[in-house]
Image (cartoon, rainbow, N blue to C red):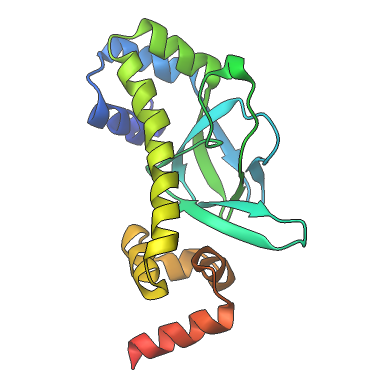
Amino acid sequence: MNNQFEMFNGFIRKYVKITENELQDLNDKCRIVHFSKGDIIIKAGVTNHYFYFINKGIVKYYIDNEEGYTRVYNFRTENMTLAGYGPYNYKDNLKALMSVKCIEDCEMIQVSMEVLNYVVENYTSGERLGRYMAEAHVVELVNYIVDRDSKSIIEKYNALEGSFTNIHQRIPQYLIASYLGITPVHLSNLKKSRKG
């Protein structure tokens, strides 16, 4: 099998039993795509027709408000998936709730919603895989809301550091501050207080 699909295939095998023929069929229906730092992959308010698996790179989920302020809601990196936080039935033609932008150059596996529906309808464990992919994003969004309203800034910061290796080398501090809902100065003071 194609080496570029190795991580993707391992991710799928972790959640469902899938035959080698089904896995090869899925790989054949997917595309390897490359994005540059700064590229917008998914735009809020626009219909998203794809699901992605990140082989390399890091992205941010965000919303720009009417005042021009960007609020970062999440980051995704290698061995993670991304989509528009909406139902995955391409026939629904639903619009993405958040935008997704590359923080680094990225290599991803692009899966069309048509292919996801084909998998759900034709593979032995397709329905389970489709349900897992949809539920994983909904659970992540709910957890974000709960954490935002119940955890302290320091708890959120520690959790972020625990979730992403080398976060300070890969993500600009102003984006981390936006994710935490604080100013870059407040983040700088927070980091200094942890060292002292």
